[in-house]
Amino acid sequence: MNSIIPNSVIGAVSNVIAAHYFSHSKLNSLFMEAGAPGDVPEGNCETKCSIWLNKCNEDSDVDALEVLGYIIQSFMDIEPTKSLFDDDIIENDITIGQARIISALDKNQLTYKTNGYVIDAGSSIVTKTLEDYLKKGDFKSIEVEFERAISNINSDPHSSITAASAIIESVLKHYIERNNLLMPSKMNISLLWQTVRQHLTLNRDAQLNDDQKKILTGVTTIIDGVGAFRSHIGSAHGRGVAPPTISTHEARLAINVAHSITTFVMDKLVAPNK
Image 1 (tube, rainbow, N blue to C red):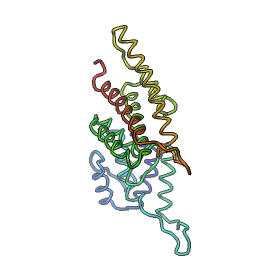
Image 2: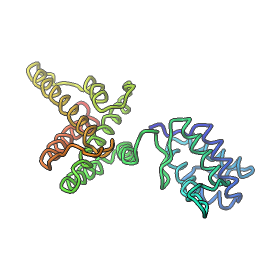
Image 3: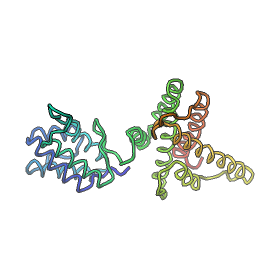
Image 4: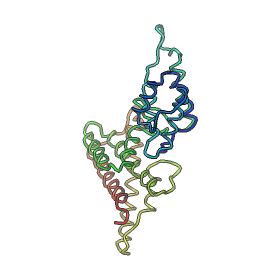
């Protein structure tokens, strides 16, 4: 995910947040706690916000969208005021400001999620968390996510399938980004795998090369199956009135093969020539 804050979002957030806090000391504390880099900028409250957000974009060691999420969290998570007589939302400076920020994010294919997450539109917080693990090379946390999926099989096999599919998807996307490959136009798991598969090096021995091709062909079928499972019974797409049932051992099979595939791709990220 691109971590740059778009200019139109910087403009909207700077104006709204500056007007809401209207205090240099509060803004200074807010930005410093969020991890914004550099010294406190000069200028009025709005200018200060704008300069500091741009500094986040310019610093390669800073996840600018993560800082943005922290800065707007308290404001965006304020519950709207409702009328005493009905459930209509009372429009005020806060609701107008929230709507303005949401609109600016939406125009740039971004969305805000409760608790300070600014992510790509159509993504989930789970996906964002996985992407953060991968960017940091924290593969151990990916293993923990698989362990969580396995532990939830008995109570909620549908959610376990969704989690396993999301992990594969995130790892494949990270592989594509790390190797500067062309990202497919549609982010479905099958197309992501096809892009990664074409880049994977095969064994130099001719016979083993053919054997490996057969295995990768089988992996393609497995990934298609996991993706189909997620679409038909996973928790991410809604289960309908009478969703298909899946047994614990069927879910475990899907998750275990998903784990094997993910481990293989992560190994290639760590040691691509081995």
